[in-house]
Length: 117
Image 1 (cartoon, helix red, strand yellow):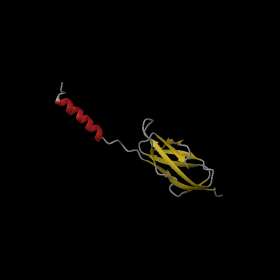
Image 2 (cartoon, helix red, strand yellow):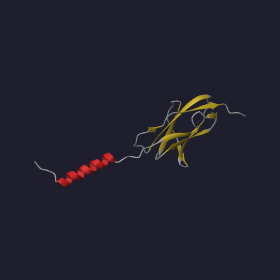
Image 3 (cartoon, one colour):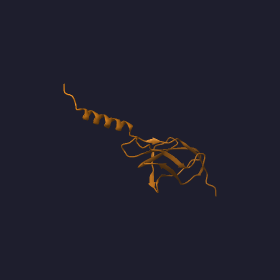
Image 4 (cartoon, one colour):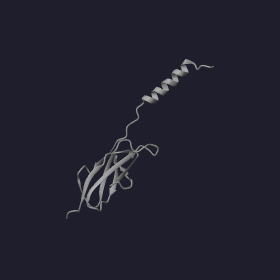
């Protein structure tokens, strides 16, 4: 039976410990606007999503399909065209790249109203 030199075992152990104790950056995602309970007029509204370290973000309106956001000036934006009046729930998700899992935020509720003249 052959034995590995102590230095090889120590090196392997150090590599394993380092891999287990290295903290991966935590990705956060938030719907900034509309804020909880905001009243939004029908027509165009730019939903703003903040996500630290994300390369891709999407939103879902009322549990609908995920829709891609665009990135500009340090935020992710979704150009929303609300057509129905009433309570709406928006959820955002983001990920660092195509190989990482999605991080999803808490739902954000707002109210869509008719545009006043």
